[in-house]
Amino acid sequence: MKCSEIQKLLYDYIKNEINYDKRQIIEKHLKICRRCQNEFEIIKKIKYAFINNLQSPSPELYKNIEKRIKKQNNLWNFNFILKPVFAVILLLFLFTGIFIYNKNASFLKKSEISEIFYESYNIMEIENNENEIDTQYLLYDQLDL
Amino acid sequence: MKFNFKEIYKQHSKYVFNVALSVLKNTKDAEDIMQDVFIKFFENMDNFRGEANIKTYLYKITINKSIDYIRKQAGRREKLVKVFETNIKSETQTLVLNDLLDKLTMNEKLPLILSEIGGFSYKEMAEILNIKIGTVKSRINRSINKLKNILKKEKTDEMQ
Image (tube, each protein chain N blue to C red):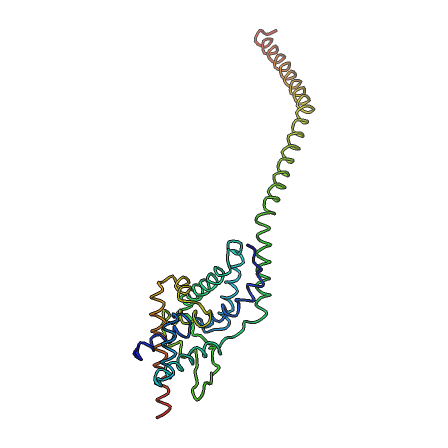
């Protein structure tokens, strides 16, 4: 294998993404070729640059994530459990209100409507009597009685 | 299959954070992205069947969220907090990773970041980036060649 071919495979060799035969060829070549050794060293430096620059995230981050998850869970609970419960309670209140209203309304009808009816009947009767008297007087006037 | 969220976090948070950091170059932004990634994972945790899927998913989401973030932020503000300012001393040469990554396009950078920080195979990277294995290989080759040339040039400049 030529140096250019070996150099193309060096990254795969480091990544261990190369078959056994090619690995053997590269290893043999690296022992004798200075130029390819230099190339190999440069690739290793690039790799070390990544490894040495690895940083750890702040330990506080996990607590923040936990808090956000908890908050989200509470919201989830509200949405999926509390919401239907609230809806049922609201419906219960609504139906109870309608029931009480209807009950009161029918009570009023029984007691008061008859009274109102009786009173209005009396008024009508009085008015009728008054009208009758008025017409009688009118007749008397016309007949000069 | 039930997963322990805390264990998954312990196992992957450092690498997810560093992938976001390599792309965003800002600690605060990388932390925000990492939190979003793990919260999204938590929401979907019950849908996973294997550990390998989780790893691929976490990095895929990290890359997508980081790129989205960059797009949103593009042109809005200068990145003030530069990370990776620690110099890596290797023999006589000093490597600043951030400067090196700046020389690469996003397409060249991402497979290299995934390969070096996440330790992914070509196949896994193809899955995460949604591209063909051949494309991953050629992008990595291109980025390695670019970086090699930069380092060689630096070496010759030093010698002169």
